[in-house]
Amino acid sequence: MTHPAPTGDRTPDRGDAHPDALTQRVVAVVVTYNRETLLQQCLDGLAAQERRPDAVVVIDNSSTDASGAVAEAHPLAADVVHLRRNVGGAGGFAAGIARALVRHEADWIWVMDDDTVPRPEALSGLLRALEASPVRLSVLSSRAVWTDGRDHPMNTQRTRLGASAQEKRDAARAGGRPIRTASYVSALLNGQDVRRLGLPYADYFIWSDDFEHTGRLLRHGRGLQVPASVVEHRTVAFGNAQSGPGARFFYDVRNRLWALLRTSSFSPLEKLVHGGATGLGWLRLLLRHRGGLFAVGLRGLLAALRRGPRPSAAVLAADGEAAGDIRAIERVAGR
Image (cartoon, rainbow, N blue to C red; front, side):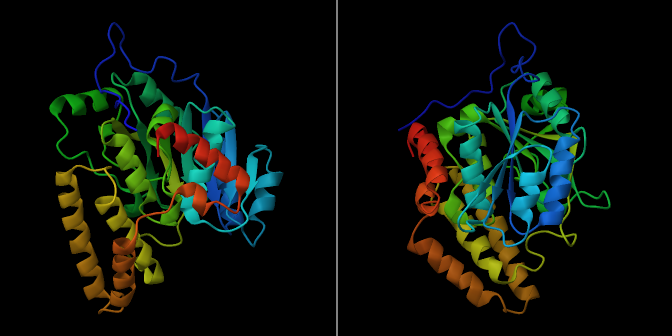
């Protein structure tokens, strides 16, 4: 099934494309796994927002610590979903975004990991940019900083390649810059577009699920990085995902190849550009680790060539309610 893409055309007789931005329903989705202290800080940050989300969904990825209990006890009164098994960040976001749409009727979904702590103006900054935008937006992304205030290299979004002067002016009018993909460390997703184009692939487990999903939403939509919206990404160390991936390098290779070879989220030119940059990055990583990651990367390559990602509802089959929410969204999207 195909769906017409939203255009970036200006809205006639109106200075912005989202006149109801400040009153639309925003549902925050947090995915957690064994980070009870950081989850508490994340939820405290949500509670301290100048403009609170209208609802909060917490997906507890079968944690073995007190993360689920922390979410249940928090004064935010979040809708806490305890999954039967750990399906990774990708599975958690697929379940959480679907729940936000199906059970909380979200207009916008604000997604973040459990080690993301939004500053008080984070959501209001995104909504002010949305309100000021002269064009329809599909994804807005916050500025992510580390604990010392430096921009976090794991969540740096490049300005959209080939963005026209008009696109840049439109973005600047809203207080941001145009982007092509966004990190799930604080991204605001247009609920209409998720219903039309579908959810992230749960089978990615970790890494590149946000790259592929926001790439899908932004193939024909507009995205904005908003410096006025700031969150802290409280990772243990300052660095990107390739600083020391270890066994997780499997997911880096498999998932990036899945995104570039098995989806239509990127144009042929974009696939070539991203593929070339990714390949060079992997080569540098392998040389830096003196080949110690070669076998892990080879397994990822073979896995990507063997098959594509399974349907997300199948990945969440052990959790019937979550799988049902996912099927409801994916059915509408024709996926």
